[in-house]
Image (cartoon, rainbow, N blue to C red):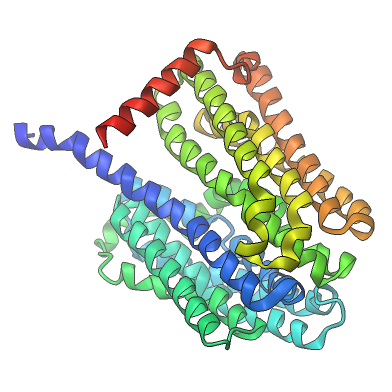
Length: 433
């Protein structure tokens, strides 16, 4: 290796990390940016109807991949398989996508609560499951090849393809539940343009078979499926249990709390790589404490100011979402150490423990939604989210302590010296600008 190559290696890694971080943030940022536009243009009830039509697709789009994108990343990184693994996985993805589309088709009348137009939109979304799964596989191949710029570009293209038409149609007064559903379902597919130049590799280097891809992907898929169930199941159930207006209020409450979730996503994506390499318990605990502190501070600031801007930002009808939003903010803040613990479980070779936490949390969340949503609507669903996420967080901390002997008591208590360090760091960054 030449000296120049060695010198450029750290900067190359920083670029890769930056590209990955930007890519991970694009979807939540696009969702947050489009949230007030959708709320203002559609109103409470129709915003709930849009959530009812898209939630089953968003859940099925993860379920139908059966962990194949992650497996492609793994085998591409190890064996340089390139896009050939993507095309080799298409028959599997096609079979699972058809099965998922059939489930959506037959479940649509229940999810739509008897509304034939909504049921038709839900059923039609199943057509996009296969191309969405193939797009995820291409993303997996790009990640395995280390082409983080392509992954970032795909996220940016998809975000723009979602936000721009929503903004244009809203400005023209032409945004409806139908047009918004089409945009939400189809806009990510435009991101395939980022992978047009994703290169192939010689067939001799592509040694992973479908059986190997499925065997690896299955282990990852259980955790991913549990995570998407925990975040989407309540939206799927809320319309038939409490109606579209309560679902509309709940979705806006989720959108409000997503601001703090962006902070959490950034921290955990960076921490996973660092902890997988170093396994430093002291640094892990400090990361948890500071994340906990930042999440609480952000939640308090947002929560106190909610009455001032929810109405003007989303529309007067959404003032009723404030109680649910306060519960959601508290949920993400209080469970932050448990989320960090779950990331550490995956980074230290115990993803099964994290998956078990999520499976139990899904059961708790489902029971709570069924019990609370018909009576308390959006507020009851937010309480169910608190119970579900709290269960997952507590179990992550428990497993991290019992199975990896990490002292989790230090995950919550913020030391005064750390507050001073955080303040100095913020002042230093501010003065540097």
